[in-house]
Length: 339
Image (cartoon, rainbow, N blue to C red; front, side, top):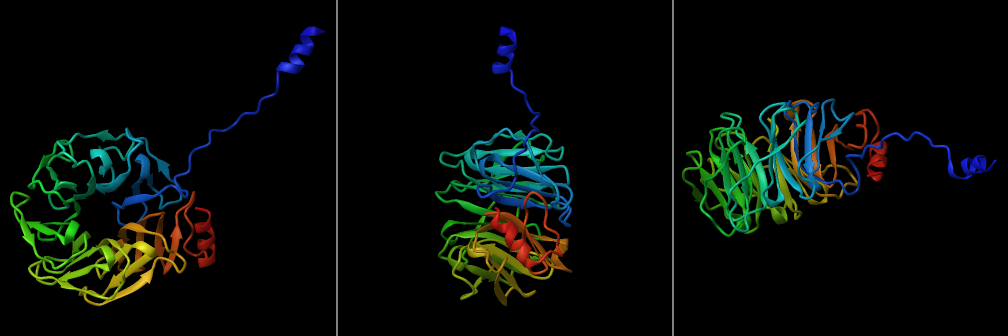
């Protein structure tokens, strides 16, 4: 009898509880960089706060949070060599590469300058596979072996380079604090400082061909060159919001920044339209990537306060599952409220 009472008091039924996987999306899950190697939006990588790397292979219907050797630092940017090989950079000098679709990430060591631990952007040159990293203290790193080894290739300066871009003719372009612009025509052996006439810090630069380029920056800074960077002109009164990223989609330039802004140009880069990623979207975005070359339905991935796709003039944030394009703008707005 005593043994039966012991069982009654101390033995309780248990229910099997399934493992709960963390969600890649939520109010605290910010993504600062995004890459779409196939160009059609089926394969997407995104990186962000506290070492988070996520990947989808089915257009956003299912996402995998990838395991990395860092979880305490923010990851700032990602670029790819192909569908399986990518490179990520972030705070505290973090550089990681993968060659197996992100199943494993290997951290690489750089000889950082004092106070040069902040790494801002990474760019892979499609023509030769070289990878470039820029960051604080005038740091510019280059790798010729898919991120295995690195060497620094710019004089030390007390400023941060915020972005690096390679134009179609192979010129390497840097933009950074205090409106600074620099370029190299010889793979980083030498650098030429360019006077672009900007007072605000520049955040990104891109070229559609060897002559036509756009640089963007804080307080609505928008600069145009039509002669390969020899001269620059300011495009005023488009926005006063900070602009963080600009891309060429094959027909026009597109840029994003604070306040949910979506800026688009004509083919010549001189005539701009200021819109928004969504009618009620007032968040910040640090990266924009055109999909399908932007030639048909003009789709853009945007990363920042959240991650989503601008499609058919609607902003569709990714949640656990991707919203279908045919769903209404009201449905998209309701899904955003859950983030």
